[in-house]
Length: 317
Picture 1 (tube, rainbow, N blue to C red):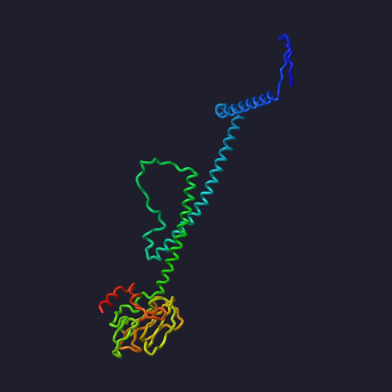
Picture 2 (cartoon, rainbow, N blue to C red):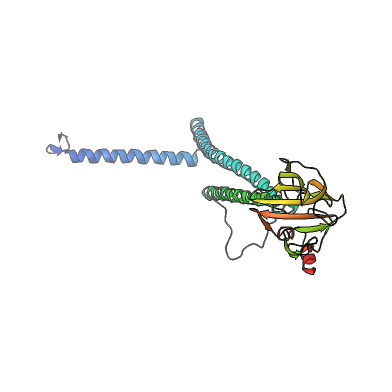
């Protein structure tokens, strides 16, 4: 583009040639000036609008501030909602942990009052002088919350496995003959092992332990199980046999009366018979046997847990 300039003050005409480069430079310069004027006007408005009593500017500033405040409140509310959801999950997990801790303490034989799961543990200590304290940011707080939530989930899973193992052990203990079948009874001279038969005078194997007791003394199940035999035997007299599972059977012989029948499910410590002298017996006593897969076992090995004095009595024989 050629522009010819004519003026009375000029001795001759002048011509200006504008190329595409000049047009682009002019456009950029104009745009820059417009942006600078806009920024300057915005800055003046922000800094001096409070002192200017111009309704339009005041309303504009109020609208901008309200919009910024609403955005900030929406952002904070979103974070609060997310943390509230996470906090609710952690509270539910904490309730599960409290209940699980009480069950575990019961299974382990620990008094739950010693741990006081429902109370916060005591914390304290002097303020650190080596490292200054600082406030957590929203991101740091969220990270700590997520880490704590994952650790609680892991602890819950591990405690659940521990509960299952303790429950299995408690169940096996209830099915293992570890309590004395006769209260306050003493071991007789006929303990488990080789002895002189009182009827033949020959050396024979005594496959159980004899408890000296008066006729009519209650006999209880040494462990829970199912009665597989209850009746009269030529040598054992009135006898009861209980299957405790895992190929373990207990036998209670020479009873005067029996209070269980075949097929009954008996609990640990339930009265099943009374001491007598029926069958091949020289006097009132209870003959107690423990058999594993049909082989006679020393009952003292099972009874020491409940009657530690039994070992001392046997050692004195």
